[in-house]
Image 1 (cartoon, rainbow, N blue to C red):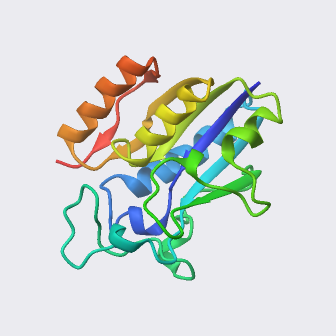
Image 2: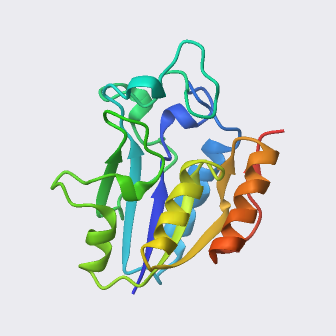
Amino acid sequence: MRALIIVDVQNDFCEGGSLAVAGGAAVARAISEHVASESGYGHVVATKDYHIDPGAHFSDHPDYLDSWPPHCVVGTTGADFHPNLTTDHVESVFHKGEHAAAYSGFEGHNDEGEGLADWLRSRDVTSVDVVGIATDHCVRATALDAVGAGFATTVLLDLTAGVAPGTTEAALEEFKTAKVATTGTPHSSA
């Protein structure tokens, strides 16, 4: 059984958002087209950065490694899925980072309190495709945790957007080392 994990395709990570990644809106549209045309998924889930008070993760003077400007705050439109992303097929949404930094969807939980790994295993999922924003941060962390949890993992790079070429290249090297398969080429800011 194969599942698609859509990572953090939210307003704040797309053009016009507080932590915009170039190509985010186009990736949202492309993911919607992929889901509509691909019938091989037994399940489709999504993750959301979902901050209430993440402590030092938010900073007025961010270093863009461990601290960031405020983003994806619960109750704001920045935390909503981007309108180009069609969510009709999404069965469950896993929220992460309420009170601490969280990059991987496997750190999150759905409204029932269930973690992503347990949710996937309870549905006999053995392999996952990972798409979304950003290739070099939350997609990276989610894919690495997926393979670490025992799922055969592929990142569909054509359906991701990276923050910067250098960190995206580093993520691609980590994927190779961790045995995360990749297809395509990520969008990245210049």
